[in-house]
Image (tube, rainbow, N blue to C red):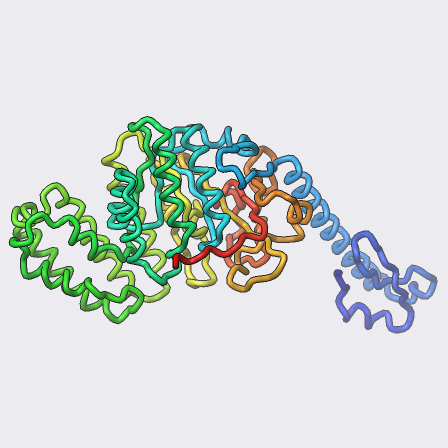
Length: 448
C-alpha cells in the first residue's frame, strides 16, 4: 500500500477524510468537501498532483504486472521428469536452439531433480541439434577419467574417480548416475555420435591422479616433477595457505618443461599436451586462490573461457550442452552482491567473443519449496510472479522469456524472490532466455 507523505497529512489537520481507492490499495488523504477550500490553492494543486502521480505510477505497475502475467500464460510448457525420453513440452525451445553451438543450463547445485532434467535435455539436444559434448563444470583431469569410463563402461574407473571427492559436496549418487546414464545412452547411438565429456574448469582435485595415470616412463621423472607429485599427493585444495608454495613449485616445473621439452615428451608421450594443460590449470588456480578473494570468480571464469577456446579449436563440428552453477551462464556482465564486484562469467566472455556471439542459449533454473530451506534461498522463485504455476502437479515447467513483445526483453524482471544480483536495469534476457521452474526438489544423496 502506498501512503502520501505525512507532511501533507499534517497540513490538512482536522479537515481530511480517508477516501480509499480499493482496487489499487492506495489511501487518498484528501477531502473534497467544502472545508477543503480553506486550504490554499497552491497546496491543493500540489496535493492533487502528488495523488495523481501515485495513482499513475500504481496503474503503470499494475499494468506491467498484468502484462507479465499474460505473457507467461502464453509462453510456458509443463515437463515430465519421470520419463527421460518424453520430450513433450520441450518443443517450446525448437526455434531458439537452431544454429546454437553451446546450450547452458544454470542450477543450484546438489538438488536431485537437476539431474533428471539434465539427462532429459541432453538427450533432447542430441536428437534435435546433434549435441556431442557434455560441457561439464570439471577440470581437464576430471574429463580424462570420465571419458575413460564412457569408452570402456568399467565402473571401477568411475568409482575410483568419484572417490577423489569422497565426503565432498559433489560426491552424490545423482551425479554418479549422470555418467552411468550417458554411457547407456551412448550405446543406443552410432559410435561417431557418442557423447564425450569436455572439462574446462581450472578448479579440479584430480590432478595428482591424472599425472600418475598418464606417466609412460617413471624412470625418467625429473626432480621438478617429483616435487610436484609429492606436493599434490595430499594437497588440501580448500586451504588457501598452501597455494603460494604450490605456485613456486609450478613455476619451476614450467621453466624446466620449456628448457627440456623433449625430456617431458618422453615421459608422457601422447599425453604431453594434456599434461601441460593440467599444469596450466593448476597454475591459474593457484593464482586465483592467492588473489584478493573478490577476484577469484573473475580469474576462474576467465581461465575457464580460455580453456574452452583452446579445446574447442581442436574439435570439429562440436555442439555442447552444459549444466553449470547459475552465475556461470549469464551472458552479460553482472554485479554480484556476494563478490561485491562486476562478474564476467564464462557465458558472458563467450558472448563477447565474435566466434560464439549469438551461438549461445542460457536456461536458468528457479526453485519452489513448500517449506523454506535457507541454503536454497537465493534461487527461490518469485511466488507472486509465478503464483499460477507453483502448485502445478508437474515437477517442472519451462518458460520462454525472449519471445516477441516479451516484457523480459525490455527491462529487468527478476524471476527470483531474493535478487542477489544487481542487473543494472538490463533486460532479463540479456542474461538468460529461458527459465525452468522446479518444484519441491529433494536434496541429492551422498554416496555411502
